[in-house]
Amino acid sequence: MKRYKVGYTTGVFDLFHVGHLNILRRAKEQCDYLIVGVSTDELVRSYKNKQPVIPFEERLEIVAGIKYVDHVVAQQTRDKFAAWEQYRFDAMFVGDDWKGDALFQKMEQQFKVVQVDIVYFPYTKGVSSTLVKEKMKV
Image (tube, rainbow, N blue to C red; front, side):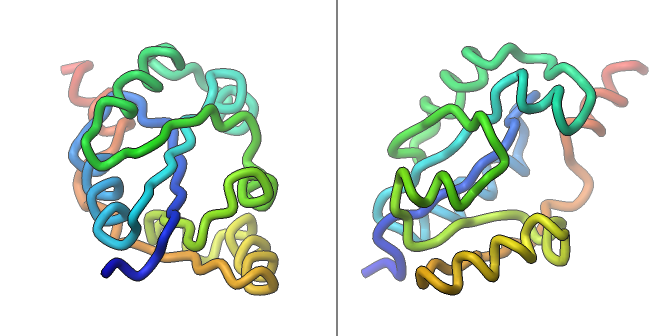
């Protein structure tokens, strides 16, 4: 039996790579039902000040096609507690590169009250959408 009933994770999932696959696989290993929030283009522009290479609708379709994903949703805000209010997940999965970030420290406090775990997975070294973009410039 898996540790969690419903899990949740989010991402931009631009230029889908093995790091993305790793977090989805690891999350699904720990929950029966995995919900994945894909950041909208507007959200990405608002906090990263850049446009994703792959349009939102296509990123949504790519993530929905991954066998580890049970349900895909649009992530229109970075407010993970609002997502919990809507989806009522038991655990949120995230890369450990976010551990200690002010946003996640706040979420840890909020989620503790409602007994939701934040599970940090090791970041996949040597791969990111930014690195893929850099390699494409060669």
